[in-house]
Image 1: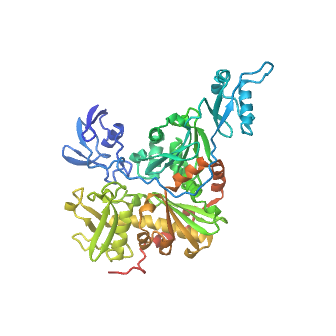
Image 2: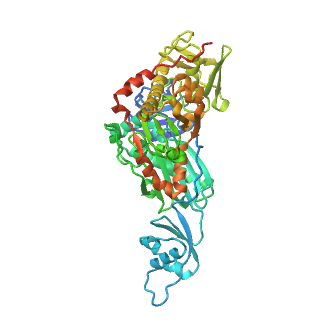
Image 3: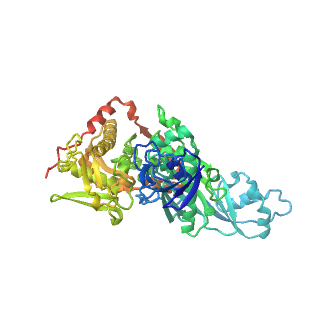
Length: 580
């Protein structure tokens, strides 16, 4: 055993000899950012040991050591989008609270206390109250409650009684979007649907890999427990923080609805992702689920429910279902395209007549991973870039010295380099600087990281792979429905990247069809909005299964033409670019 002291965090732990520094960081609860999952390929986990910078994931501890993590990225620093577009729905939740009078049994009345309570509920307007099954825990207090002879408040679903209180109480509902990168949580008032509090965090699973493939590989090699427990613990902490913000108790939360992509869904439930990573790439479970929250580490009301929205396909998950609930393209006469750009690019095209969907492996490049100076959207990240009158201009999040490129900044820089002739249609970079295959946007002396912010030839190739996957997916869906760009009335773009990106830059590099850039409507965290809608209206929750079953899934990997389409889209479109 060796003593490890993390200088920045002032934490000291003991670890067995041979433990990697990355593993020691996890054991110390530091939540390091490890986009490659510890494979040693991303270079994002650099730490300083004895004055020397080393990769944490590849360096084993062989002696007592002091470690400086200042240079490594952390999951605590990012800016997270929580707002999103949503449509108004009537407040008709699956949780209801009714006031009833409980009285002592009269002589000759052989009904049980439970039966008489159900009768009182029926009088209060609950039509199927007699079908509620007896609950031994709640029944044990009914005699005393009947003896007091006063008004009681019963909280219940359509099938189950959850609570009986002498006061109406501050019952709440909570919705969560488990993204691959970020988590967003919302606390709602169960009496009127108002949003009481919002909380966001980085997904702690990122320390096991930036994308779903890396995390699935980790789960298959080491089991799902580490990935499952860390996300459950984080959501439990978030529910406690949400309740505290609203001056409520965590146990006031009666229902939680969760959305996430299929892999996040499976890992939260401690389900092996094996079926997702092996052909034909199907979910282990796709239906909507109602589960006891306590069994999944969520310390809300003891009888609180956990609602999991349904998955659509192997890589089109419950988060896409949430987006569909938020915008309901199935109700529209006109054709719309819904696009969620993340490590996977999920998209849904169609109208009330027919909806088709697919998922493309865009990779994490547009979220900062696999890019040498890439980073998440945190302070110091370059978020927008322009080139005017022969000079480069950029802005950073938090107006801090530049330390890297987040997704929107990467998109802008690539588009500007292409537009002004530094990149050709094949993606070949000629920067005109000392190393023509590297373009320095920010020199070391002007940066906040002492190495500068730059783009390499390899970075551009990663952008090409990401944009080609998404563009090819759009083309295949249009071919499936036999429609053209002119037929698409609106392009909904969900997620943080879509919210902050410049549509013109997306069109310039061919990420989306150029003709659609003036029809874009950013919808932010629509997945989280869909989770809220499922809580606000019981019929929306019930309809989610039907909605997802009616969406046709297009398996791109099974289509011979997809590979040809993907290769075609690797090139940058330059026919409309005006060189300056």
